[in-house]
Image (cartoon, rainbow, N blue to C red; front, side, top):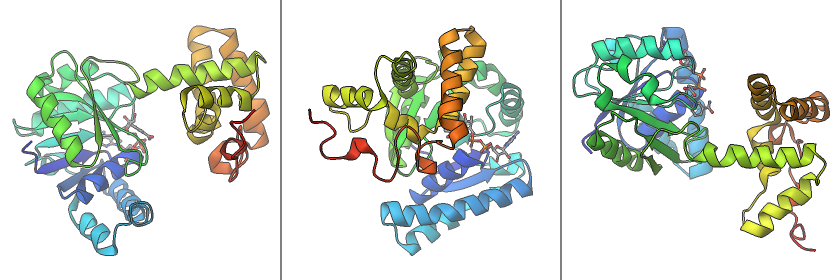
Amino acid sequence: MNFKNITVAGSGVLGSQIAYQIAFKGFHVFVYDINDEALASAKERIMKLKQNYQEDLGATKEDVDTAYNRISFNSNLSKAVQDADLVIEAIPEVVQIKTDFYKELGKVSPEKTIFASNSSTLLPSQFAEATGRPKKFLALHFANEIWKNNTAEIMKHPGTDMNVFDEVIEFAKAIGMVALPLYKEQPGYILNSLLVPLLDAAQMLLLKEVSDVETIDKTWMVATGAPQGPFAILDVVGITTAYNITLAKAEATGDQDYKKLAELLKTEYIDKGKLGRATGEGFYTYPNPTFMKSDFLEG
Ligand code: NAD
């Protein structure tokens, strides 16, 4: 892996985290965003990350300052990518915005530059043509709170060059990620292909009054050895996100169960301020939820 200069395009929630993680691991990073105002917000966001790296990873003040100083900010795309080995795109999840961006990026980038998309729900084949270099394009998907949740799902589209795929896997490892290769395109990658059906199934058991939150989680925990069950996971995801996803499915499919589930999440949780772990209550009450109690898995 010969990457030296990395550009992160889009410096919102994920772009800021990706840029800082890469800088923390010793690479020079260029951050590109549409204007100076967006870049000013990115600087603030990245400054705040220093504290997370100190608290969660035990990094020293010198470590976090040195990492910050490896980042340059630029709102001129040509300049931000002029010597980039890799551009990681983390701009809004809107097909037209991404398509326009890739068309422009393809024009202004050096021939050597590889492009990777952090998109959560859009597939790389949707943009391969727009990049003008489909062989050098793939998905590189990170999780929120990248410094702790250090998965990197690396996904080919049918036209991605295998050497490019392997190089990006090596890069992901070099920046402290657990590299998870996907050899074929898959909506939701590996994680959400596993997690979404589990969370859906748990919520349907609750909706249909087959059992209660604690029993459903306990079943999963005892039977598989998992440290938490689906409702504990939903509390971390946040009930609002769960509600939005369920509502979108209800609208897309017309499925009455999804409609009822969305109503349940709204009336029993969201309207009562039970939004999940972030607000201290969701399916469980925090900081000491019952599933963490020593006797939860007994009897
Ligand atoms: P965000 O809204 O926080 O940030 C988007 C950034 O892109 C903003 O800084 C905005 O100014 C900038 N932007 C807008 N138009 C642009 C353009 N044409 N060119 C360059 N920059 C532009 O979004 P986010 O949550 O960071 O998500 C970004 C991408 O990362 C999406 O594809 C999303 O699916 C993916 N993602 C998000 C998460 C998450 O938890 N938020 C997790 C994994 C992946």
